Amino acid sequence: ILTMPAVMTATANGVDTSPIVRGVWLLENILGTPPSPPPPDVEPLSPDLSKA
Image (cartoon, rainbow, N blue to C red; front, side, top):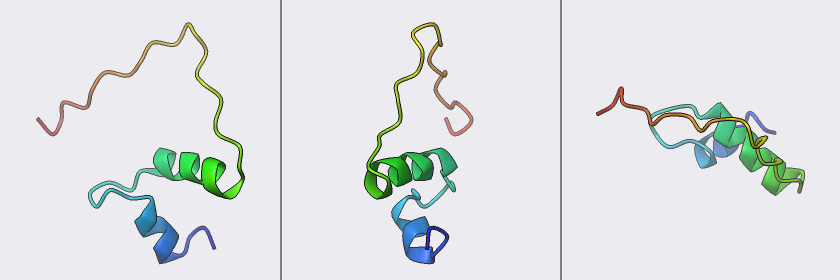
């Protein structure tokens, strides 16, 4: 069911496949357990400048 086109389309942005976004969507909407926040000592990712 999770690889059905409707689920893939609902969790994609039209350009990228977004597997992380799909995983978060799965955890929140299907399993009912949102992912835990990152540890406090992890630095945030830099913005994607490849599309700028």
